[in-house]
Length: 170
Image 1: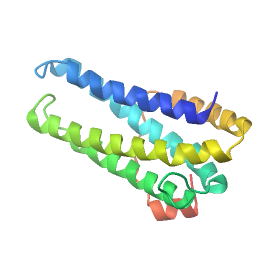
Image 2 (image 1 turned 180 degrees about the vertical axis):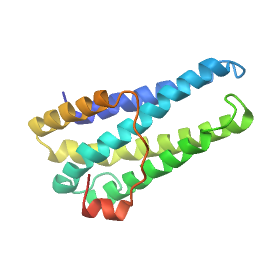
Image 3 (image 1 turned 30 degrees about the vertical axis):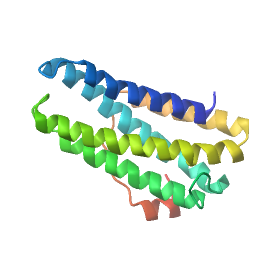
């Protein structure tokens, strides 16, 4: 198991779940609500696991990849992105499922998440592949997946200060 492959797989699952929303009739609030509830959990638990296991190690071994100057820049930006995704997800809460305003906020979350995943794949994951040995990648993946399974029903979203995070990750 490799943490970079696991993260890529989960990105695919997030994209697929957003796409599932597109398949459901707009007036099927039950199905839309069920899919959205699952997606909320996927997004938050994934972000929390990255912040707990992946990014602390990237900060110690990364050097920057793609269009990022350093692992610190990659990490600070990723935590900021996670906060933006959390904020967008929070805006969906309390809206009538399937309404125009609900779809607008879901689309906002989708855009924030898509932008983050593209950047993470281009920078953070590439950096990690270049600088982490296979055993480290395996060990982090095992801890990451165990954490996600422990929190399969969700966790409370908590924004983090990106600058403070890179000083004291986790």
